[in-house]
Image (tube, rainbow over all chains, first blue to last red; front, side, top):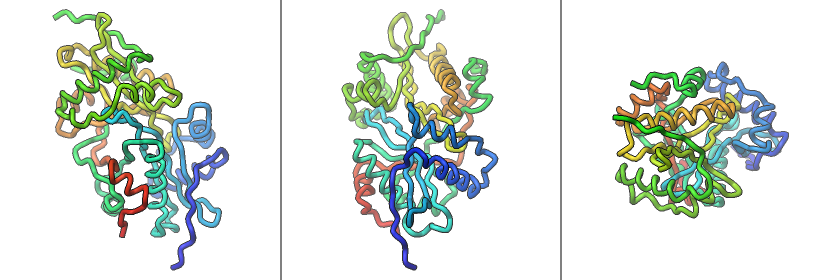
Length: 167
Length: 167
């Protein structure tokens, strides 16, 4: 198979439509479409507004967007350095096994180095062995004993009110 | 025991010294002082400079800082909402069991709600049962099957150069 050349570029205003369509495609792939409650308009303001919360890079083949990575900046207090946290990495199923995910990760690592970040991090499901193997071959270490704690929805409102019992 | 009143406030320029001293105290508590390679000057620029990467809140008793929380903004693509990610939560050992950690978490939940964030998240070591119990009572859910992947140090430079074998 002859692979076409993949190009990675930063997302710009106007790309929110294709990014949101890829977010929906990712949710479909994960059978989680019911959890997609966001909107293209909010995504636009959060990526390109006065107070950006995240950034995105796009993978293109022959001018068509076939994958994306969306990330934000984390912070290490021990290093006193920012880090890049990769929230989503997705390549359309029909464009896989062409090194596009790898090209997106390499681009993120280059951004991390350029901005003097101490680390590049993301999360993976512990049963997703193909992904874990790929990430390990890319140089990633799995942190085996850390777990993510999350407060969301009603529980977040309750916590804000200080209403949870803590004894 | 009579508890003094705890006050929570946002950190301001000049607080970097006490925050960095608390980061060192946290590292000592965790027996990880060898991993503290940062500096107060970098912390100041990352908290209060032109491009802030993180924010901090301080817990005070009788005007003395006795604890802190340092956080940054994450992003959920499914919700198209930012989130608050709590990087460090620390209370000086001699001031524990007075509800100071709880007060810091409640303040963060209030900030999350005020800024229309979809979630408040942080990480915990899976063997730290007292902490996990406290977080659960505060309303947090543990995500059991997600693992954190990290690329740092030489591996990050290697990834940026695309030098890792991926086959």
